[in-house]
Image 1 (cartoon, helix red, strand yellow):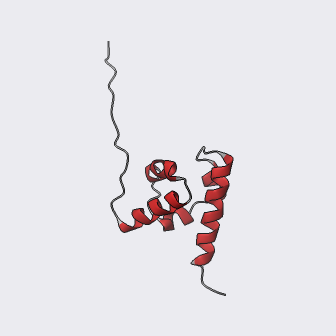
Image 2: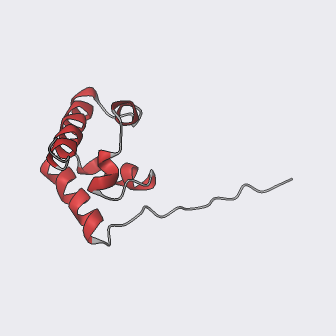
Image 3: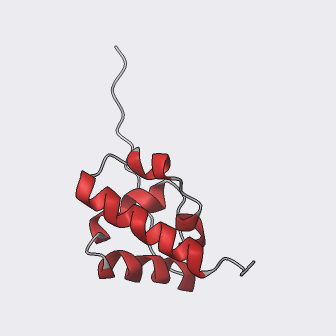
Length: 85
């Protein structure tokens, strides 16, 4: 009989200026509880957050109000850093 093994995976931690920016943004939006989820998905900076599409955000499994807040902020960030045409 095979014994079941348990592997513990440590949650990613914030350790760079880029991840600190992401952490601050999430705290400002009162969405800090999604920080670990984003980090586990490889979203470790505001640039990474801006790369998420609406469907990416919708697939995170968070409540509608929180999704809308995050989608709005991603759109604002994308516009703010876009070159003027």
